[in-house]
Length: 346
Ligand code: SAH
Image (tube, helix red, strand yellow):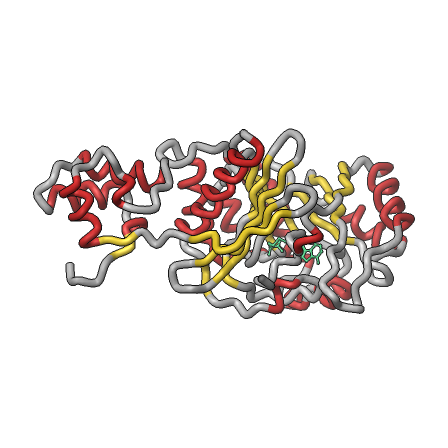
């Protein structure tokens, strides 16, 4: 190894064991280090107190832990916390802690910026700089777990991949992070409490289905009519709804689990009976649930939250057709921490 230090979290448990034995140490030291890294989220070798000072110095001479730094924290009136997360190369992403009376949800980022171009989303205005590494996603979770313990005296209960980026365009790293978050030799959280949200990348949805994940899938739908969806989510011309439908069927065949459709209703965009009918039809493809989410303003005159009457229309007609529907209120709006507002403003 040359004098360039290596990111230790790129190595598997076996790699670490081998590394130790090759360097005249006992293999179980590799297990100890692995535990410090992935079970306890250690930020430094110095924290690894069951290793001798010499071993810690040895590690420090050869490796780095590219830990994130929560650079800045904003707390909303409703208790939501937005973190500006600084990465080892100086780039920044955001993550959000969302508390309710019974649970704490972490909303984590998967990419720096985003390559998709949803017209209504603030993150889309940032260029995609790079994918996050598994450890950088894991670190966001550990940091929010600590915040939940500090502010609410309870551990983190849920995780949503609904921060910056398109998780299915950083497939390998996102799945590796979930392994560390759910694994027995990681944080041991239940995958049932994790939701990955995608804008709808059919090929990757199928790949995910093949990998039989144990976590939940959400699709940001917003319109079940191609000509309308392409106007608000221009990449829909490459990934039209027919392909998404096929991917959803494939998902359900392989996993047997329903998908949540996220849906914002905007004035003059998707607030007519025709839009509701199209959504109801779309909901017949596979078992699903619809979350109607509030529009969070990003200062774009084209977009305005639809009237309560339009939302009621969606809700009542979906219910009439026996589709499970939730109307969600946004959290953390006063600090630009709500869905689609993450844009590294601070
Ligand atoms: N790229 C993935 C992950 C981001 S999740 C995806 O699109 O699913 C962010 C969620 O917030 C998505 O459902 C997105 O459509 C929604 N969203 C984006 N901008 C929003 C806004 N201004 N108001 C409300 N929701 C928004």
